[in-house]
Image 1 (cartoon, rainbow over the protein chains, first blue to last red):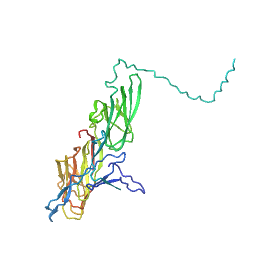
Image 2: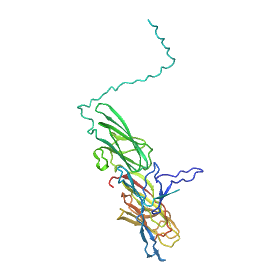
Image 3: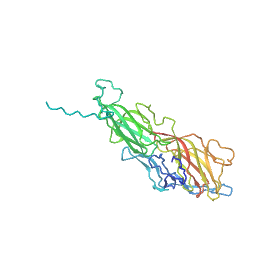
Length: 100
Length: 297
């Protein structure tokens, strides 16, 4: 999101509506409003499944285990397979939840 | 002899203006005359206006003029309705010489935004794959406060120019997850700055953030700093080509990276934090890039 905070007496810092990705849990600004600059969220390939275990000297005892993100979301656009000159999201994933 | 009608008295004051009209004094005889430009629109030809933009929901107004075989100059207007990403509209002029077109964003310009438009002579097909592109008339950037078009401003390719400076607030990862930013489709970036903060939980472990760039599959570069973050701390990190030999006493810790760093669509900018724990939390990365559009993906 590109923009600046609006400050004023009696006015709080108003943030833009945010979205939470239901596939990876990341949150990001909602850029669907007209005049926003586009931002396309894409889930990472893998996330931590079990964290790394270290000894009291900081040496790795058990390395972290990774797992792939199930049903990842990719908001980048691709040509619509059935409708010429239209574009669709690469993958919806588990959708998003609107936050404030 | 019938009586004459009374002459109405002229009202006082300045007489009102009268509407004046007259046919054009200049006519054109296009028969057997070499046209002013080399592209003549036949009856089955059309003009496709294709736009690409990084602004959500903007629309473009295009005004054009053409000379008919009868020697009359006609005017027309079309609008590319609000779009995100790419859009195309097709205009049929029937037959004649296209004299000019100019385009402008209908909304105000947006800092960090860009819109590029191309006008192409085509033979329409039912699907884009069946469409014949015969000639590119003009391509260039479109603005909100001034018109651009043909003939007029010099044509520019999508990757021309100094690029647009954008500052981007990325995605805040879930707790225990690392930062993952991806260069969008049809974009080319030059990464200028990148910073984020890590708040570690009470879990005892030494975290070492490492800055990675890859092409979606292959690691291109990874680098870290000299700082090891313990539990219950908040520390800000900046990518930097210069890493000091000692930990920075206050302020942001550097993570090693080449900058400015060229990136194309699908490339990833991410952190891999050694020792990250489930309660650790990265902030959304804040980074600046030079951005261009790109057709090669």
